Structure formats: C-alpha cells, structure tokens
Amino acid sequence: MRTSSLAEELEVVAASGSAARRSDILSRITDLFVHDAARYSPDQVRLFGDVMARLARGMASPARARLAERLAPIATAPADVVAMLASDADATVAGPVLLRSERLSEGDLLLIAGSKGQQHLFALASRKPLSQAVTDMLIARGDQSVLGALIRNRAARFSTAGWRRLHERTRTDEALTAELAGRSEADADEHSRVGGEAEIYRHARDGKLVETAAALAALAGVPTDAVERALLNPRADVVLVIAKATGLSSITTEALLHLCAAERGMSADDVAQALTKFNRLPRDSARRVLNFFRIRLEKGAAPAPRGELRLGL
Image (cartoon, rainbow, N blue to C red; front, side):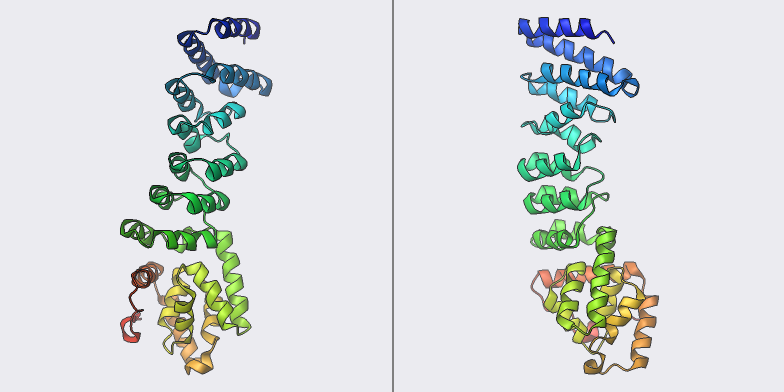
C-alpha cells in the first residue's frame, strides 16, 4: 500500500476543502480496502481507518451512509470508523453497521441502546445475535416498532425479567401481542431459563408457595396471583400447561404438583397421573393454551373456568 502518496493526497484534499474531491478519494480508498481487507495487517487497517475517518468527518450523510454500507459486512473493518458510523446522528448512516457489523463491541451496542433515538434502536433490534443486556435496554427504551422488530428477531436472547417486561409493554397492542404469542418461552435465554427452573424447583421443594409462584410467573410471563391460584387449584391442568410451555423438566413439575398437594386433595396416585399427562402433553399445544390464558388475563377477563381448561389426555 502506498502510504506516503495516500498521506500526501489526503493533505492536499483536506487543504482544498472540495467536498466532491473528498468524496472521490474516500470512495477510492474504500475500494482499495474492501478489495483486500482480509490481507491487511492490524497496522494497515488502522491506517485505513485514520484516513477514512478524516475524510468522512464533515461530509454529507449520503457519503457517510455509502461508507457504512460498504464497511458493515467486512469482518476486519476499522473498529474506530465503524463505532463512529454507528453513533452517527443520522440513522441512515448508523443503520447498516448497527445491523450487520461484527466490529461493534457489547459496550458499543449498550451505549447506543441507552442513548440514541428510536430509528437507531429499530436497526439495532434486528441485529443478529443480540445479548440479554442489549435486549433489556431495547425493551426499556424502545417504542412499539422497536419492540416489534425485537419480537421478530429470532436471534435475540432475553433475560427472564426482560421477557416478562416485553409481555407487559406489548399487552395493549393486539398486533404485537399476536406476534409475541408466536414466540415461545424457549426463545428466552437458555441460561436464564435453566436458572429460573432451579429457583422454581428449590422453592417448590421447600414448600414455599409465594416464592414458587413468583419465580414461575416470571418465567411464564403471567401475573403471580394467577400462578398462585393455579398452584392451589384442585385440578392440576393449568400448572401442567405452564410447566410444559416454559420447558420445565418432569422433576421440577413433580415438585410443583407436590407443593400444597395435601391442601388440594391430591394423593400420590393423582400426582403420578398428572405427571403422565405432563409427559404426553405436546409442547406446542401447551404454548397455545398458555398464550390464550395470557390474552384473557391481559384483556381483563377472568381466567378460564375449571372445566374449560381440559387437556384431554
């Protein structure tokens, strides 16, 4: 790479103040970088980045947007330039790198999610993948279009708290509620799900009704009082549906069934029969029933009567 001639030409361009000339040089340098991006050393990439940044500053949005489009898919793109473009006030410039660039760190994404406007958040919500920390921030700050993009992003990972908050924030939007109903609790981060299951099992094993209901409600995205009523209901169908839909194991489900079993009049045989139902219950069916249950609660309707929620197994 002819670093001396590039540097000399850059100085001439900077002194001339010609926007057209700057744009032409930026395009040529970007061509040169993209053509052999994988072969350049870290020092060479930094040099390219310095030149690109000096040229891009002060240029019109279309030129910066073209630079972002070209650098977004490049795995070795200059990180400083990508971060500069991602934080650009113009969302048409920031969008391509927010959506696709591998050069943005978790810290970069959190900074943008916590400070930028809705158009930036919308682009970020479609990024694949997205961590729990980023989705938590997007759920807290995003408008309905951002939440919709997040729901449709199958590579987005959710914390238990974020998943529940997402349900709360979309409950008044019928279209988003319907879209969210198409996603299962299995889409929540697996580590969060397993951690939530361990908490549920521990509380149920220790006979702590209130704590068990709260932990299960957080995982299922339904109100705690509704889960508590289900745990106290002589029929175990609602508990089985929630357990299957949220991916709980049969061991944890058995602990839930034993919780308050005496108060509900459940014998050891009743628990065994309920577990048989649980093992035979298709998870997709359980998800549909749970989503129906959520919609009833969110619309202010009473939970389904005892005889209405039969598994038929």
